Length: 101
Image (cartoon, rainbow, N blue to C red):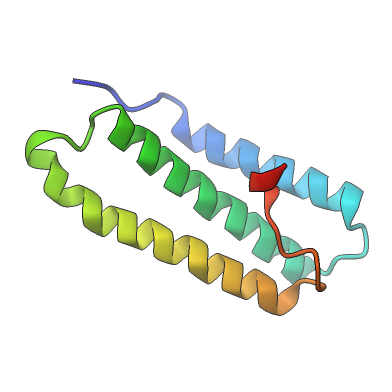
């Protein structure tokens, strides 16, 4: 059976740190609220990515399969909520996360 990646928590911290630095360089006048919203979106996308990697690695095969759908829905909901909040607080045209970069 596949094992969960070690250091997954550090991946989240690294993703947030990268988002902070990218934002500081590209949007120096962005508000603290928008910066936090952008970081929340990066963290939510990172969590969804880890969940999908775990699924691909077989961690949700067999009896564990029934747990994947609710976790997936929660992860999707978290990304959508974070994106909606970012859209509400970020300047127009800057709502995207690091996912496309």
